[in-house]
Image 1 (cartoon, rainbow, N blue to C red):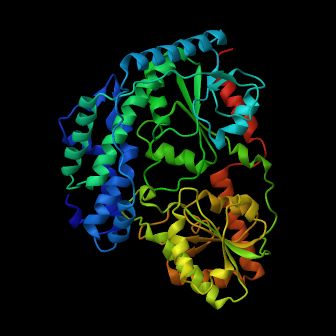
Image 2: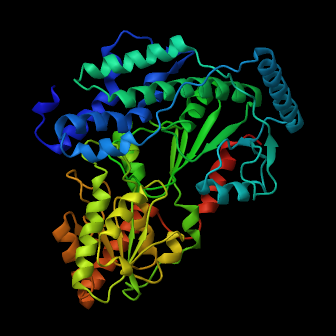
Image 3: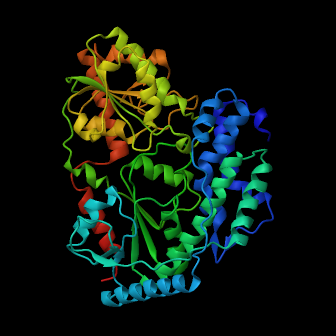
Length: 490
């Protein structure tokens, strides 16, 4: 189906996802090596590139800003082999020997391996070390005592270019069947990413072959490099466990479940996996988020505070995963908030950018604004900013949920043409702000909510918390630890 024949933005987003998942059916290129399906593993590299190719084709004028941002990016190059082959071979042999010695020191293979440090896993890993053997690569989880460390083996220094080119050619040919042509710069980036994927996956397979843990604990299972651990572990008969680390903030990208055992926060993610994932995990547990065990549920809406808080989602081109998303969205939201500031002379705005957002675009916008003296771009943690916020402006982000634990009124800003991913408004848990006018109206409305309106908003937030964060009974950590212990041999 030609891109130009699609009538709605939802059809366009769905078309892009279909191309990402099914390009391999339209090429004769070999995409599986050593039992690993790289057509599946490369999906995450195509999220932004396919969407971007379609945006350029369907709206070239709007694409000019994105093109200018991309032009400032450095184009990567393929890694070159080490000039001294003997020296590299000796170094790799030494690293492998060190890994082998570390594994021998563990004595038993009845341990949990945590290959990637992530904030989501810290609390659980620290608690697990009190009852089971937990192994992690050296220099990860530095603040946690009780871990057993291993030195990872060194992988190859150069990819198999024949395999790289075959997969790359397959993607380009397969996408052409959907009339999608990647940007030249994206095609170069993709080739380098494929090379890195092949190298890292091979190294991971060697790593797991030497370790042979009873299970692996991950914070995600659908993107590089953690997905390579899932695929390699599956080949080796090693069980993979994944803990949900955030809400579903993108259409389609999180539909598939890959890990063997998955712990989700609330019933919403559980039901979506059941309905959307082609591969069903062996087990899905609704355990809640252990990080939320520290929160007390509020008893009423709290409209007190000193400023409006806007916590952004990433809008940089690399994070626009659907054709309907644009890098301009963040600036457009900021411009709407600045227009609202003009009507509220005593209001202040604090912007908490996502770590992967492009702050420079906001700074440029603020430099032109006469109200910039009432705007602060904060580097503090967002949770430290919640208590003094009168209103929290959230996009499709976990931040919207977390604001509800502080009882704060939430405005859902969503300026994309697509439907929001998170149903804040459908649950009556937030006020809608799907355009500049709606956002300005919502900011005025929140400041004058009646007691009945506050009660309705608070009740919606409690329903949303239950559906998306779980029971919130301060027992999530206990449930997850018990789940993991039950999966490990005695």
